[in-house]
Amino acid sequence: MSILPEMSSAADDIEEEIRRLDEEAETLLEEMRGTVGGLSDLRYGRLANGELREQVLEGLERLESSCDKRCMNFHDRA
Image (tube, one colour):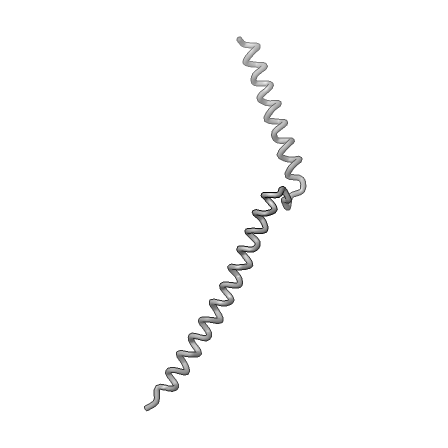
């Protein structure tokens, strides 16, 4: 009785597992590169939404205007 068939099957299983793990590692590496690239863009102000700066400034202006109105109403009542 020979153990060669079992050893051969085990070796095939290990090779398949290594191949699967290599693919998984490559996928994870690509995801990490994308995340790092996105964080770099955020750090240096290169965002995918080119209008974001203007949208944020408009929102801040509306907030400032609202605060000014509330302060004026508060002072008028005082």
